[in-house]
Image (cartoon, rainbow, N blue to C red; front, side):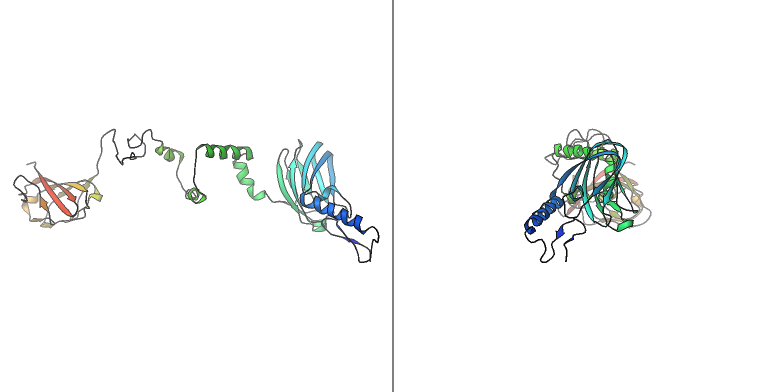
Amino acid sequence: MPSTYTTNGGIEKIATGEQSGSWGTTTNLNFDIIDRITNGVGSISLSGTSSNLQTADGSLSDGQYKALVLGGSPSGTHTITVLPNDAQKIYFIQNNTSQSVIFDQGSGANVTVAAGQNDIIYCDGAGASAAVVSLLNSLEGYLTSANNLSDLSSAATALTNLGLTATAADINKLDGATVTTAEINYNDITTLGTSQASKTVTADANGDVKFSNAIVETVYNLTGTDLDPNNGTAQYKTISADTTFTESLVSGESLSLQLTNASAYTITFPTITWVSRTGNDAPTLTASDTIVFFKVNTTLYGVWVGSSD
């Protein structure tokens, strides 16, 4: 039985009892073919508009290289046909020519590697209908938006220069974010802890915040009865019935409350310590009063500022 050859690499499979006296020569050639298939880099000089990339059985050939460096001076777009059409191949392509190069193998799809560009392709070896497919095709949209790998290199350098230590998980927090460039620039502050117009408010190293302009507080119309500074620190309420207040302050919080018509009804406050010149004495409410509430630890304090009648 004569020797046969592998489909994809053309490596000779010596039949039992064959090649007496020359078996070693064939084996060494096979090792050279394997070496080229696994790691070989071949320089392919192109001319004209078409050429074949052949894998020959039992001999070293250009089609066995793993990486192809294309050079020469093709006259316009050049088509390389991978032969034979039943051999499965993976090639790393570097097109150093000034022309686009098309790789085909059969009547199926082909791949165009633009001048000066790189690609990784595989040939499916399907015979007359064989196709060539780009393994980098899924990156096409990304590479297009980034213009080229040089832009990506510049971007990587810029991030390095920023001294970023963000992890992939940190960066993925931005996935789906609708933040705009203008909104990101709200964080472009001059001095930590000092407020600026149209910028984020920050605290300095001591936790202090300095306001360069007025502090504008929310003024809240208290329609219910709960004293809660989360609604705003300046509140007002018109009394129209006997009213019992509750409170939701925590230690360190305060609010001011303007009451109208409180003298006409019974007003009950939560447990409170009144601060006045005469001690813990509740005020006598009038038609218009201002009271400041604040809490220290668990004690709610109240200060009757006065009446505007």
